[in-house]
Amino acid sequence: MEIKAKAKHIKASPRKVRLVVDLIRGMKVEPALNQLTFTKKKATGSVEKLVKSAVANALNNFDLKEDNLFIK
Image (cartoon, rainbow, N blue to C red; front, side, top):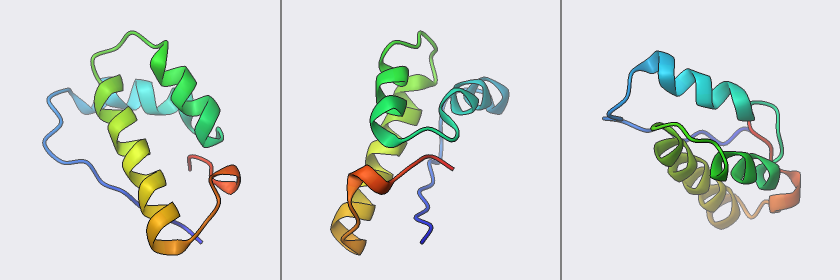
Protein backbone atom coordinates (compact mmCIF):
# COMPACT_ATOMS: atom_id res chain seq x y z
CA MET A 1 0.00 0.00 0.00
CA GLU A 2 1.29 3.44 -0.86
CA ILE A 3 0.58 6.41 1.39
CA LYS A 4 1.10 9.85 -0.13
CA ALA A 5 1.57 13.20 1.52
CA LYS A 6 1.97 16.53 -0.23
CA ALA A 7 3.46 19.81 0.91
CA LYS A 8 2.41 23.07 -0.67
CA HIS A 9 3.88 26.55 -0.43
CA ILE A 10 7.37 25.52 0.64
CA LYS A 11 9.61 28.58 0.68
CA ALA A 12 12.55 26.90 -1.01
CA SER A 13 13.36 26.12 -4.61
CA PRO A 14 12.47 22.67 -5.94
CA ARG A 15 16.12 21.93 -6.66
CA LYS A 16 17.12 22.59 -3.05
CA VAL A 17 14.24 20.53 -1.70
CA ARG A 18 15.14 17.70 -4.08
CA LEU A 19 18.67 17.62 -2.61
CA VAL A 20 17.22 16.91 0.82
CA VAL A 21 14.67 14.39 -0.43
CA ASP A 22 17.35 12.48 -2.35
CA LEU A 23 19.22 11.97 0.93
CA ILE A 24 16.35 10.05 2.52
CA ARG A 25 14.82 8.32 -0.51
CA GLY A 26 14.69 4.55 0.05
CA MET A 27 15.36 4.74 3.79
CA LYS A 28 13.16 3.48 6.59
CA VAL A 29 11.32 6.16 8.57
CA GLU A 30 13.45 6.23 11.73
CA PRO A 31 16.86 6.54 9.99
CA ALA A 32 15.36 9.07 7.58
CA LEU A 33 14.20 11.31 10.43
CA ASN A 34 17.62 10.97 12.08
CA GLN A 35 19.30 11.97 8.82
CA LEU A 36 17.04 15.01 8.53
CA THR A 37 17.87 16.02 12.10
CA PHE A 38 21.58 16.32 11.28
CA THR A 39 21.26 17.84 7.81
CA LYS A 40 21.87 21.57 7.68
CA LYS A 41 19.67 22.74 4.82
CA LYS A 42 16.79 25.18 4.82
CA ALA A 43 14.37 22.64 3.33
CA THR A 44 14.91 19.99 6.01
CA GLY A 45 12.27 21.47 8.30
CA SER A 46 9.59 21.25 5.62
CA VAL A 47 10.61 17.75 4.55
CA GLU A 48 10.74 16.53 8.15
CA LYS A 49 7.26 17.90 8.79
CA LEU A 50 6.01 16.18 5.63
CA VAL A 51 7.51 12.82 6.60
CA LYS A 52 6.03 13.01 10.10
CA SER A 53 2.64 13.86 8.61
CA ALA A 54 2.79 10.91 6.22
CA VAL A 55 3.76 8.56 9.07
CA ALA A 56 0.90 9.84 11.23
CA ASN A 57 -1.55 9.33 8.36
CA ALA A 58 -0.31 5.78 7.79
CA LEU A 59 -0.55 4.89 11.48
CA ASN A 60 -3.94 6.44 12.19
CA ASN A 61 -5.86 6.05 8.94
CA PHE A 62 -4.52 2.74 7.64
CA ASP A 63 -3.40 0.96 10.85
CA LEU A 64 0.09 0.27 9.48
CA LYS A 65 3.15 -0.33 11.65
CA GLU A 66 5.96 2.22 11.65
CA ASP A 67 8.57 -0.55 11.30
CA ASN A 68 7.27 -1.41 7.82
CA LEU A 69 7.27 2.14 6.42
CA PHE A 70 9.95 3.56 4.16
CA ILE A 71 10.40 6.66 1.99
CA LYS A 72 9.65 6.10 -1.65
